[in-house]
Amino acid sequence: MPERHDGHSDLHSERGALAGEHPGRVKNPVIKVYDLAWLEFQKPDLVRAEAFAHAFGFVTALRTSSELHLRGTDAGSPCVIIRKGPRSRFLGPAFRAADDADLLRLAEATGVRPRPLPETLGGTVTDVRDPGGLGVRVVSGTHELPPLPAQQPLTWNSGPYPKRTNSPQRPSREPAKVRRLGHVVLQSTTYRRSLDWYLQHLGLIVSDFLYYRGQRERGPTMSFIRCDRGTIPTDHHTLAMTLGPANRYVHSAYQVADLDAMAAGGEYLLDHGYHRSWGIGRHVQGSQLFDYWRDPDGFLVEHFADGDVFDCTLEPGWAPMTASGLAQWGPPVTPDFLNVAVGRRLLGQARDVVAALRAGNEFDLSRLSGLLKVARS
Image 1 (cartoon, rainbow, N blue to C red):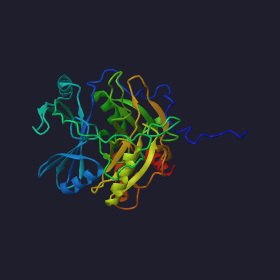
Image 2 (image 1 turned 120 degrees about the vertical axis):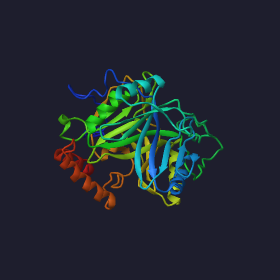
Image 3 (image 1 turned 30 degrees about the vertical axis):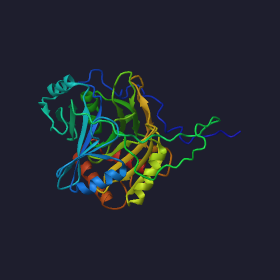
Image 4 (image 1 turned 90 degrees about the vertical axis):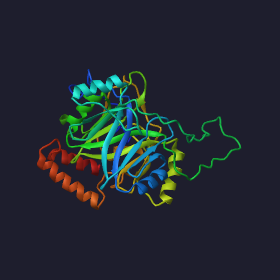
C-alpha cells in the first residue's frame, strides 16, 4: 500500500519548543491583563464608518459629532471607538486590568500617572507605549453596557439522532450580529522586543509561535498570544504579533454566532457593495472559522466563530510560517489579505521595506527573504 501523506502534517503546531527557544511567558510579569477592552481608530468620515459597521454587525452605543462607539451584543465595553480626524489611522488597543490595584502597579512600573477616562466610558486608564511606539491603554472600572439580544446558533441535524424535525433551515440574509471583540493583530519592526514587552508588562502568554523556514535558529517571527487567567480558559489569542517592514495594524476579529451567521452576513455585505478580502475558511492556529473584509477606510476586519480556548497549562506550539498554512480549508489566501495586491498598498509596502532595511532594526535582508518565501508558499 502506498504511504498516505497528510498535507497539513507539517503545518499544525502541536510540536513544542526546542532546547533554548523562547518560553512564551515570563515568570514575574508586572500585571496580568484580563482581556482586550476595545480598539481605537481615527477616521475622517464617521457617517461612512457607521454605515459599514452596521452592515458588519455592530450596534452604535454612542454617536457625537466627533466620536463613534460601536458595540456587540455581549455585556461590557464598546468593541471599537472611532474618533473623527483628518486621516484614517489605528490609534491603539485598550486592555482591561483585573482590578484597580493592577492599574496602579503598572503605572508605578512605567512611571505613568493613571488618570480618569471621560464620563462616556468611566473608570481609569494608564497610557503606555510599546517598543514600536504604539499607544497601549490599560483600563479599569469602566462602565458596563448591558447585554443585547444575541443571534442564536442554528440547530443542526448531525449523526443518527436529529434535533430538528418538521422545521426547515432558513437563515436570514442580514448582518451577522457581532458578539464581542476577539483579538487584534499587529506588525512590528521590533517584533522580539515588542513581544517581550507585552509578556513582561501585561502578563500575556504565547499559544503558538511561527518561524520562517530555514531560519528557526534565529527565533520566531510571529506569535499568537493569550491572556493568562490561570485555570480559566481564554481565547487562543487576544493579541497576535508578526515581524514586518513597518509598525502597523494588520486586522482585528469579532465573534459571531456560527458559520451560517457568518455566511449569510457575508452575502449581506456583498449585496451592499463591500469587499471580501479572504474567506470563508478555518484557520490552523486558533482553529477559528474566518471571513475577512475591508472597510471603506482600508482596515481589515474579521468575523470569526468556533475558536480554541486554552488555560495556563498549555505550552506554546511551534510551526513554520507559510501562506498555505494559514488555513486548514478554504479558498487560497488572497494577495489583498497578504497586503501584496497590486495598487497603493503594495507601493506602500515597497517603501516600508526600503525604510526598514535602512533603519537597521529586526527586519533585515535575511528576514525579507523569509517573508517573500512565505508569500509564495
